[in-house]
Image (cartoon, rainbow, N blue to C red; front, side):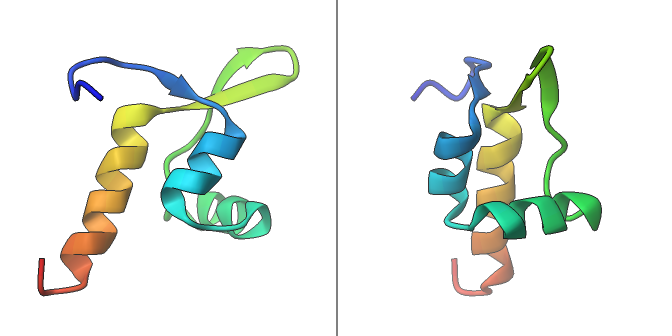
Length: 66
C-alpha cells in the first residue's frame, strides 16, 4: 500500500493489522496506548491507516532488534 494514501480502516482490518482482540483494542484506547478512532457516521468509526501502521512499527521498534 502507498504510504502517502490516507485511508480509514474499519474494525476487522485494524484488529488484523494490530494482531489484537477487540477487548484489548478498547482497553488500549482507554489507556491512551492505541490511536483513537475517527467517527465516520452515526454508528460507524474507522482508524487512520497511517496511525495504525505507525503503532505497529512502534511495537516492532520496541522489540529492540529491528
